[in-house]
Amino acid sequence: METNLWEKYSGDKRKPVEDFCANYKEFLSNCKTERECIRFAVQKADANGFVSLSKLMETNTPLKAGDKVYGINMDKSMVLMIIGKEPIENGINIVGAHIDSPRLDLKANPFYESQGFCMLDTHYYGGIKKYQWTAQPLALHGTIVRKDGSKENFVYGEGDEPVVGFTDLLPHLERDDKKDIKGEDLNLIAGNIAQTDAKKDKFKAFILEILKAKNITEDDFFSAEIEVVPAGKARDFGLDASMIMGYGHDDRVCAYTGLEALLQTENPQKSAMCILVDKEEIGSVGATGMHSKYFENCLAEIMNLAGQYSELALRRALNRSKMLSSDVTAAFDPNFPAPFNATTDAHFAKGISFNKFTGSHGKSGANDANPEFIAQLRNIMDNADVAFQATEMGRVDQGGGGTIAYIMAKYGMDVIDAGVPVLNMHAPWEIVSKVDVYEAFRAYKEFFLLKN
Image 1 (spheres, helix red, strand yellow):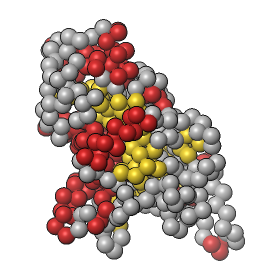
Image 2 (cartoon, helix red, strand yellow):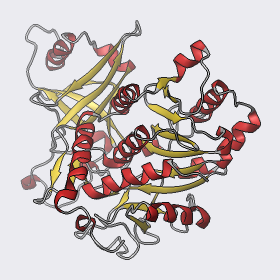
Image 3 (cartoon, one colour):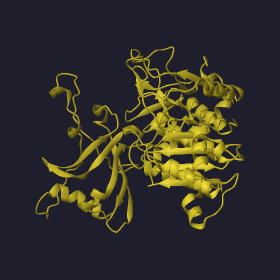
Image 4 (cartoon, one colour):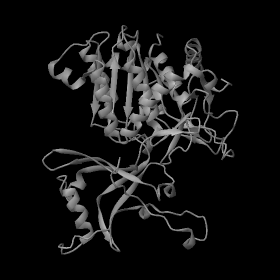
């Protein structure tokens, strides 16, 4: 599409875009960790008639066409599915996004003192430019799990609460612009008040006393997931309010739009599924990443309750499925044009981006979508007047990236990357176009209705 989408959504036609994005901003502001995203998704699913798979398994409740079910994996990934009119072995229309974002994590033993400060030691997660995280107001989000199994959701630094952060060196003492910050240099300043009656580590003791009021001890941090994220809300960007700046567009913008599209789908011909997955930013590894067998096991359990399970039927379902690997892509940046190809890279306000392949250099590590599948997508998008753009990510031998597409393609299903263009990707504050967000939602909704 050559024209700017704001021409399509001018005047009164802008209202549905703004309404949708207002809800998205609220989600993005409140869901800054994987667990927070899953809690949000469960709440929405419950309100829209979905039922927990674990509860259905306990009662051996049969599933039929039109039923809605979700499974949760360790509170950090999730599968939601609507049973279609056709047998599941005929294939599923899948939209899959990841809900983890680049950040920093507290180490298992984070507290120490230095020069009158209580400090917190961190380890960065995913691909970040470390200097971008200094001199920023940061918050702590996560979960404490005590020895008795009880959990404490932990949020500190939002709203009017005090924030934490990494310091940076003043320009007077740094005569060049080189930002050679090491991972071990990223140590949070947590406090500067001494606990006067403490025998040692007085500054650390004062902070621990604050945490004690929340029934949290220092040892509890060993069995905790505490993430260091930008403090503050997502907000409109640009004097025309045409964009959104917030933390975690990569890839929660695709997770939210995919989830909302599924929630608004009723009685599809083929089964429809939304996958929200963890660990993509570090290779989709671990029990909650896409390389895990959870997705496959979850589907087997659903097919069993639907009276459709056999090993062969499961394999056929996986092989005959079609998937949009809903992940963001880099938008052309007018401030840094050199790494981009203006004719093949994604642009703001041009709609959802379809990347036929990702990978790097000579398509290394890429899923390369089949043209028959792409032609099918072109047809349904054009028929629904959904704006889309055919893109790559940066110049050959300079750009590229990875998604979960190649992992799902191993089943033999048709897969293509389809997501929202982003500026400032992997920075603490990323930027998207509102109209691209809305078109992604519309694209996913149409895809769930695909019949063959």
